[in-house]
Length: 247
Image 1 (cartoon, rainbow, N blue to C red):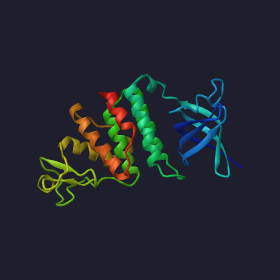
Image 2 (cartoon, rainbow, N blue to C red):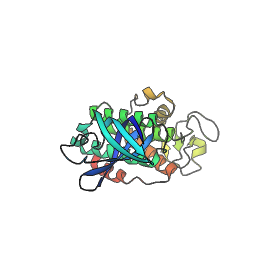
Image 3 (cartoon, rainbow, N blue to C red):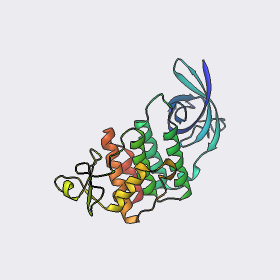
Image 4 (cartoon, rainbow, N blue to C red):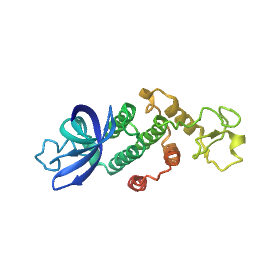
């Protein structure tokens, strides 16, 4: 039997038995762990708060035969204010759905955890527009997973910028005015192109640090969500609920 501690955030819970939970934790050192939390549904349980959705804790685990159990959860942040705002709550749940379907298993995933924590802190603090946070999270997930779109220049002729640009949501290719008009890729405002380049190429500390006209945030995040779904070939169920919540 192995005992170890790991920082992590709860991205899914599942009821089992009368008072137990199966908890999916995105950890800093071991990726996503599926662990049993005995009695965690009980209001008086020492695991109740730490094993709730979005809880960021230092967890104490035991592992035997690849079965994990949570023994303790030292809470660092609960992100409680997310539960008071439906669009934010739905977006945070969508982030968790994305993580469950994209994070590689059994590896150190510190960058995924860091991205998630930053996105949730910004959501709770109203420090960035909600659609900007969504777009950065989606495109950064693609980058961390090895699917950074090659948007430094036109994929066909190498032009850095023309007055109209096009983005192919299947391949991630950026096309200039002349090359893009021959296909069916949607045209993209130059400010949106600049925002996407910022997200892809900036140091991690600066990926959320840009401004974009509010009217352009929706086109930006529609591109990033479509690209993310295409590269992973999956439809994220919670996207529909998110867009219903923000209307």
